Length: 320
Image 1 (cartoon, one colour):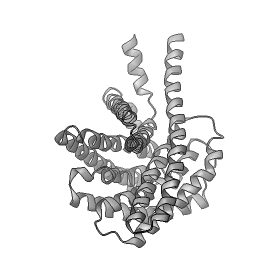
Image 2 (tube, helix red, strand yellow; image 1 turned 45 degrees about the vertical axis):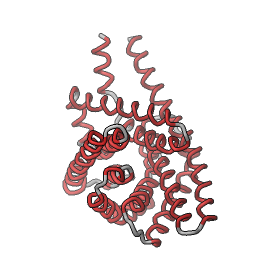
Image 3 (cartoon, rainbow, N blue to C red; image 1 turned 120 degrees about the horizontal axis):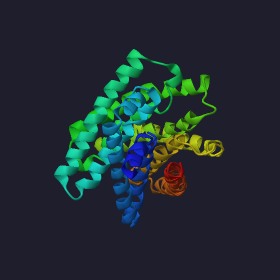
């Protein structure tokens, strides 16, 4: 009975946990340089466990997975699995470069396959403007996690290809998404939280650009951070509205975007200092501190509630 119950619970895992763990792992990478390495280790192990659970879900409940994957919004979020794989590759690289790089490459390869299928199934074959929402960025720009964590892999050519792809697709998608949100705003329901994802692609582009372009164009850097900053203000202004809802898996939309936003501000601060603008760099550094503070609270809240839902589901099952 316990094994059967566990198997059934795996089938019910919401897809949104995947991007949530991407956010948690990214956040832990920001705490580690401050000396809190245990936070990073525990978070990475937890991320690996979640990833294994989703692999089990695909293997044991392929029908459920297929149903989710053929639906546009859940399919876009399944990219979180490949993003976790790339982050874990970076983590393991420190202990075993061969295994770590292989895992990073597997995540990058699977994300590429996922991206191509998503384009075919949801853009070419079955485009629906109602499901064209910011979660698309998880799939389209999520591949840039490979360039956020991929510097140690020493693959500059692959990195530059991903960076330029990401910049181009961001330049195409962002205006379309902004127009969509203005003309057909998302005002209620679980999809409302996806509006926070608007912070993620510009942050991914900025971090990846600074990681792999040896002579970055300052105007591109400033333009990208301007978008990051405006997007951050947009998310912060909407926080009261976001938290006016009762908790649901859609809260995952607040996690990774806020976490990668910290990385972007941290990178921008270092870039400004390197350019000789120490005062401006210090201002951005202080903004980074506020982001770290706010994001830790948000991701902690989301993780706590996912655990609470999991525990309550087992209690309900046992009572039945």
